[in-house]
Image (cartoon, rainbow, N blue to C red; front, side, top):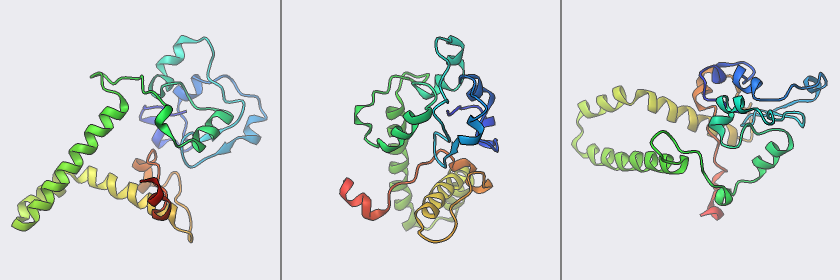
Length: 187
């Protein structure tokens, strides 16, 4: 139930017309029973099912999500299954790369650039710092929003971040890592 259109992230209800059109109509009781979640899939209910046999649904969110919108109990089981080793990424991007290949390429680029930035510190050149802050401003905002969201989600006290909070809108699709104590056994 994720769409790449610009309407979804700014929607108060985390819906867009593409998601609605890709699903079968729901009964009225749906609106009394549906559960809202803070991470994708944002809505969970057994009656949320993709349209069957309709090729026009491929133009909507399911064309970008691989197997179609996650729905109902399948969506809940997908959240519990964090082992992606059995998944095969068959949805290539325009240049033929899979999601994992594209993401790994971006990660490698960012890590290598970070090493270069660490080297730049010894020269204390303010112009380089200004260039990084000016040219990378949107990336730095995204990084701060994602890491801030993650930090707030891991706090045991205080309020949880609002789904529609303006400062976390760009981090909507960022899934927080487990706390450090849980992460030690994962490596």
